Image 1 (cartoon, rainbow, N blue to C red):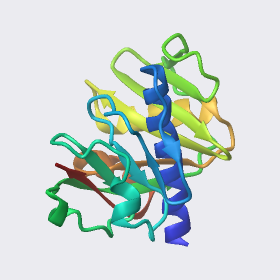
Image 2: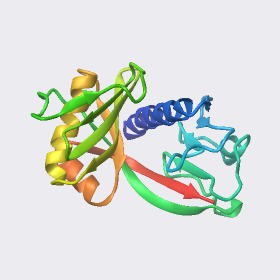
Image 3: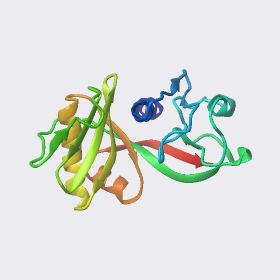
Length: 197
């Protein structure tokens, strides 16, 4: 059950990575086990994302630019890329929540950034979040705030829920953001690891 939830979250996240790449003029490739980009992705985005726990190292690395700066999101935390010159950049936890909540006051939608119906960008002046959809699932990413974390999580969750009503919301977090997500109704699904060369 946890693996299935992680697979859904990883797929939604990979779709977001692909959307960002498309906004920069190129697209990645989805296979059964991996999403990857032959071209170096924009800063802070991985060059490959595993979609299943049985993705192999050759499947992940073949066809991507593995020069210094390459990064891989190991969605199930089960690869060892250290022998290929990679180091763990950070570890995090996939999260999920089903949310039927009203939009928090002050949040508004800005759709001018992507022009894609599967993406919604929201803010309330102090916080912002990006929502994206893949199939029946919604992704929550790029949450940032200058205010209280719990307020930001409540507002961001309501914004994603307003974007794609009835869709389970997925994402990943670590540290204080993970703690705030769990306090605000999210469930931890499983670990992920990001590798950097």
